Image 1 (tube, rainbow, N blue to C red):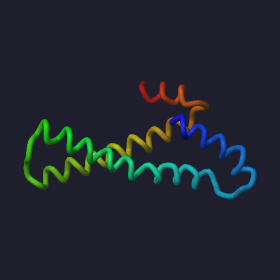
Image 2: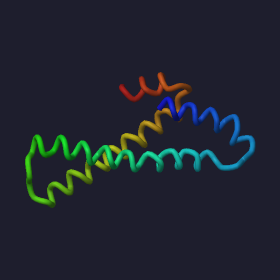
Image 3: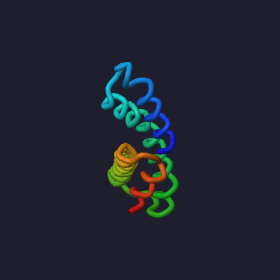
Image 4: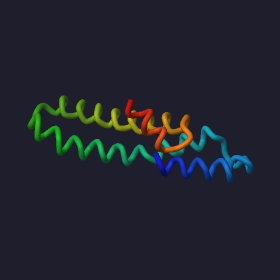
Length: 99
């Protein structure tokens, strides 16, 4: 979130007046850039948590759990962007996410 606040400040000062790209493109680019990191994190969580708790099960069940984890991490990252866009700074955005 703090990185997004810095990027948003740069966008407001530099890119918005020059009309190089729109606000929608800026938000979409920030979300798309984080998707590979979220997928890698979901695979790491799946590998370290799922096998330790559940053990080896059917491949269909394992695949569904992995897809749900990937979906959850992408949703959480997108929701964090949604919260920080509406807030003036990272500290306020973090407090709104925790409630």
